[in-house]
Amino acid sequence: MVNVRVRVHSGHMLDLAEALAWTGFRVDDVYGARIGTVEDIYVDHETDAPCWILVKMGRFSDAHALLPVRDAVAGTGHVWIPYEKDLIRRAPQIPAGMPIAQELERALCAHYGVMSSRGAEIAGLPANALTAASVHGPPPMSANGAHGQSS
Image 1 (cartoon, rainbow, N blue to C red):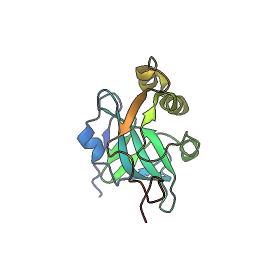
Image 2: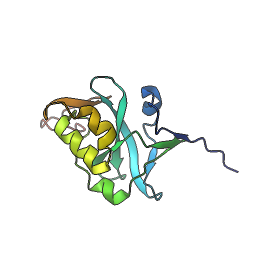
Image 3: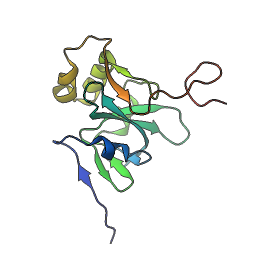
């Protein structure tokens, strides 16, 4: 018998240290299809509370997706998200590590249907106001001035 410890976060504030512990965890969609791996946690610009999970999509891809923290379920080495893989692939994109402005975050909230929670929190801010940022910040600049791994 496998003993898996699972913790549901819906309805209570997730602790930043707990969310950061998810880094490197496998992420699966609502049906158990592999989405990718947790690469970073994005926090609210004002409160530092975790609000988004940055997931690297697939092993050999440079694509990333931001997923809402609020309904994630975590177990040992694993995070489950209540969204279908196809919906996640169609989400608004952001370069890994870059901060999120209100306009993009509202688009993400609308895409995932979390306007009544996170979307309401940021609704009164200007479109260009920064609302969330990566805990680890942007990736280092390469020699050619692009974000990513230097060669």
